[in-house]
Amino acid sequence: MNIKRIIKHLSTGQAAVRSRFPRAVLKKIEHTIAQVEQTHAGQIRFAVEDALELSPLLVGQTARERAIEVFSQLRVWDTEHNNGVLIYLLLADRDVEIVADRGVHAKLGQTVWEAVCQEMEAAFRMGKFEEGVIAGVRGVGAHLAQHYPQVGAKTNELPDQPVIL
Image 1 (tube, one colour):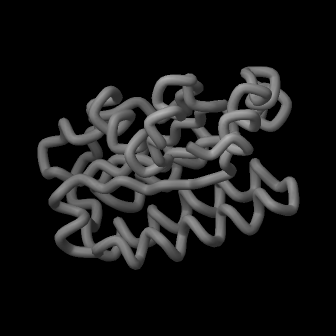
Image 2 (cartoon, rainbow, N blue to C red):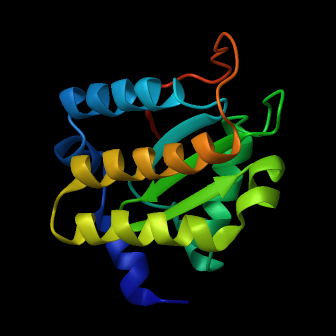
């Protein structure tokens, strides 16, 4: 049990999310996702969560474990070609996790996503949340364009708007 982490989570709330991601920034992220998805056949979701609740903290749930739960809850796995990708930000930890569906993961692996996460986290350390997320969406999109090129009409299987948990 990490007492410092628990205190940080208990003191981080929705106000922290709203201050870093006001409505205008969320719209820009949504627009970027829609724009980037025109270049490939993949599906991208972005979700931000202020903090974990106390019970997951007490058992030591990691941001990665929570991201996998969110991946399932948002049904990112439910795409025709198994090409959904979730970008998850746990604000209290300033930890970014990218969870890719099995089709994407088989082609790219975790190392690729770690590089995108590190770039986003570096921007967040400088207080550049909008820029960090947009760079992350574009980075994921570039990899998807390489492995899932857009062929024919685009079907948007998942909503583009960011999710605040």
